[in-house]
Image 1: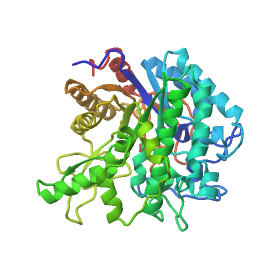
Image 2: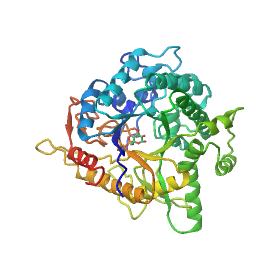
Image 3: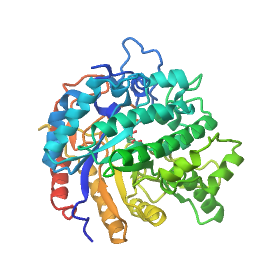
Length: 477
Ligand code: BGP
């Protein structure tokens, strides 16, 4: 079964991981801008007071802010039908609370959107991709406070009205469910608790994260309703980090432990954004965890009325869940699980599982019966330049090929799959480690973790491979 003829082939980036120009043209400081560089073993630090002489990866990133024309032309050369990027909230409202939006910030995104449309590339805009204005962290502790709902909606309204004729697809919160775990508190919600020093060792208060999630659910639902009022053609999706987990053994205890993990980590946020209400299993979880979520009059109705039009995921790896403590932990995209003896891992220890993507897409579509899109998938790897300067990233081609094959199987299984935007279609800064060395792109960027590099771009072997994939609508892999 081939992919449908209007299948949205493309690629994905995030503002804070590629734009740079962190304080240019009126942009304010986002939470990403106070994170230092790091590595797989040395966590990136969170420094509310920026340090002289310290390297902050988001400050220049790969300078997409000044290279966007060249980069989008390269995406067009590969034949992109869609380009997923985020608008950095702090370019539009530097502190999040200005009465009027920052016109220069809007003008940058005018240019990016016009450049995409010049090549008939559909923009797919993420409204919040780990870019909470740091001023809102300082004043409200981020999404822990309900004030962020109205501030976020004001930001959304500016964009929905500005891009009415030019944009069709929107995503509210990137990996909204990352905040079901301790890494998502700061990364996704801008919650920074006293005593937090670095990304891997945050002072974590689950009550604040799950209250923050409620505020984000209400904000997401309000954004969906507002978008549909402003332009009935708008399609708004949710975005989940899908960390697929299998029971480590057929022991019913492992199966139940795995079910609970999947419910809380993988299904909970999507259930609310697609079905419009809190599921019973999470109410039991809150009770068992001693959490009480404050809800206001009208919230339940807002959630019911603000269900999303489509469901999107990031999918990189899978893991296992064991009811027994002390099993060897695996690594993964913010959520790890236990090692699966049948799978190999990436250079960063993420377990590679293409068949897991077919399994996951089936589970999702069976549950929600709305269009699904894979908006992140890819292999972070150490790319090395050959003598002739080429990058022979056959390992990345192999990873992507196997995942596309399994997406094709999922389509054959009846899944309504909208599109595919591999993550980091151009090398950019890693979210979890803050490093450039973890490269994902079809395009190599001369930028290194010591801050050096002339930012020049060059095609990897996977560039021409992906171009053929798109030309053949997924037939030639
Ligand atoms: C997801 C984020 C992306 C991207 C990706 C790869 O969590 O949505 O922003 O960063 O993971 O992860 P990393 O950059 O940590 O390798």
